[in-house]
Image: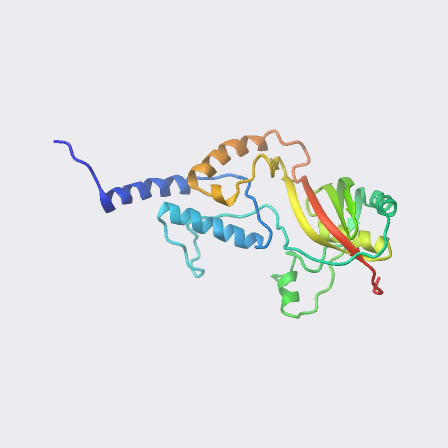
Length: 245
C-alpha cells in the first residue's frame, strides 16, 4: 500500500533536513554589506534569515551557546561628511605619494579597538574621554586618485590588514593643511574574495546559495598569495578648511 505525507509532518521532516544542512556549514564566504547598517546588523539579519529558513528558533542574548555562529573578517563603517576648500588635483596627487609603502598610522578614535574591554566607539558614544592609540606600522601597496570633482575625490587603496581608511583620509587632509573625512567607502576585495565575483547580496542569503558559495570560496584560500590580509578600499572623500590642525 502506498501513501503520501502532507501537512505538518512533511514540513517537519523538510525543516530537519534543511537545519542539518545549515548546521553542517563550516568555512568562509563573502557577503555584501549595504550602506547604512553596521557590520553587526548585517550579520544579525543574515543569521535571522537562515534560522527562519531552517525552522530553527532565534537564540536569546542570555544563551551562552549559540545555535549558529557567524562572524566577520573586518568591520566596515557607516558614512561621514564634510566640505572642500580650494585644493588642486596636482597637490592631492603629490600628497598621496607620501602615504604609499610602509607607513606609521594612528588608528581613529571612533573604531572597534578596545579599552578596558569596551570598544572605543562605544566609549565615545557614551561621552567618555578616549585617548588615541599609538601609531602602528601598516602597508599601502598602492594608492591612486581615480576621480577628482571638488568637493569630492575618489581613491583606490590596496593595503595590509589593520589599515584604517579614515585615518588615511584624515592624514591626507592634515598634509594639505586642511581637513578630510570619508563620505563613502566600498571594500572591493578582502583576501581572495572580490565584491563583483563572490559577495552574496541579501536576495541570495539562503542555505542553498551559501552552500554553493562555500564550495566556490573555500578553494581560493589555498591559493591566496602571501598577502593574506590584503584588501582593496574604494573611497570617496572630501576636505574642509579648519583651524585645528
